[in-house]
Image 1 (tube, rainbow, N blue to C red):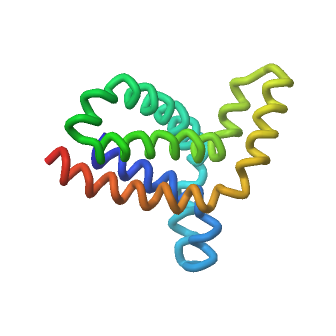
Image 2 (tube, rainbow, N blue to C red):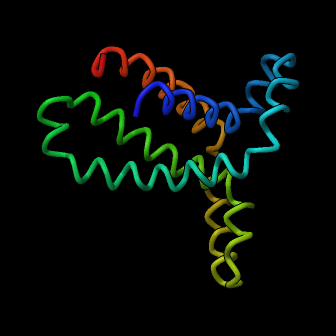
Length: 141
């Protein structure tokens, strides 16, 4: 995780908070519109990348928590946000791979419960993305 991950997380956040951003800055609609066609895949990849991030943070908990506790917390928080926001944004892409109707219904129910938090998760992802970029210079530089 480093600068690239921070940028990815920031872009994920922009897509998640697009409605909030456009409401405050209508000029941003054009720029967000350029990346929104890729929203499904960005979300889908983020969801899986976040899952790997949680697995990695658990595997390396002893080393990272001992030497880089702030970095470990950042890494884990980024992974959780990627799973949550990635699930919301990548649900359409994810459902294209799932053929069982029961699974699709469960995914739809989960998205319905999480949807009210999408904007907030997007703002958190943007902040965490910026912090990840800064932290990569502080802790890994």
